[in-house]
Image: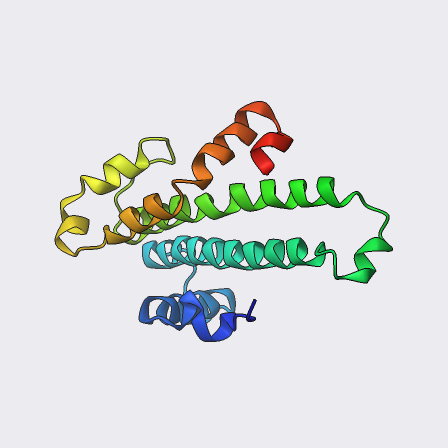
Length: 171
């Protein structure tokens, strides 16, 4: 797997991200009033962008940890960790983290467009029914996410409701 340069691909390199970073840092340094409505809004957007960025880092780390268990990697044998249990743990972790991205992006849209929806199972439906997001064609990613996660979601649900991934599901 090719290493990803998150500084180059960061959400904070977008115009929104740059504005949020600049204003948030200014508020932290006391150069901007941190109690204004705009400053509080910027802090929420910053928190949402940071959460998404952290998820990408976590997913990349999980992939690297899975790759570490490859039979050709001799140093894994020195860990004295059961390879199957190790892989099962990290795949379960991966199956939880990847679909989480969609929820985080929905939350970002909720915050950026000040929709005021709470975090709930119905957030996606509410977001999809928001006229401004439909008009700006900002919902295209949902179909992509839903298609990409269609094979992961049943496994994630199994883990969430059963507690772990059965060996038969893992194969």
